[in-house]
Length: 252
Image (cartoon, rainbow, N blue to C red):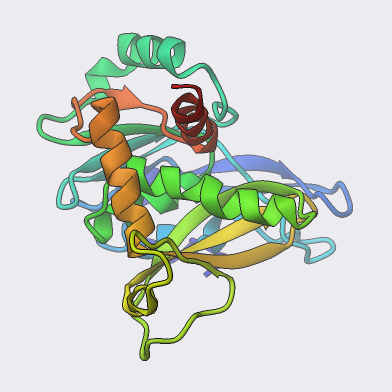
């Protein structure tokens, strides 16, 4: 699915210039300006596949990651996201004010509005809402896993939600973090597991999971912070935001 010539939504497709990260060859690739599921049924499928933003260099056949401003609109799932490359890690209060001053016209009544910094995060929003999860709680799960990997010497760039797994038996799964509210409780091994791809700085991808008790703990954190309900404005909820929330809990 690296090529998009078959897409049935030509008004949403443009061209972008790409420089190959392997051989430096400059070529053009197709880009999607708007993933609107109302008029483009394949939008979720393309976004979920992720390989559409890895065009193949015609000279050396290597894949090169691309990023550019675009939108994702999903009225059925109730989410609209705007991709602004490189916005990750910005001051959330200042960024939120600026975003809503300039992007209020892009809002839809009754929907959640998000700003993301890359296609991984845009696809993550689609998956989170497809599973009817709270995206702030999902972000708060990441430091639990990433912190553990860092303590083992891994250098981590980021992590993104990929889906949910239901255990077939009450058995501890590898590369999974388990939280329990009752000490050593075997019942946690029967809980659904939230799956993530953790991206290391060297480009390696490490699959990781965390159990439902951890998600419920994060929901309680949001309630304590008054962040469980959405206000309909554009917000940047990313790893930096999640780390700040966890740090604030340690300081209080």
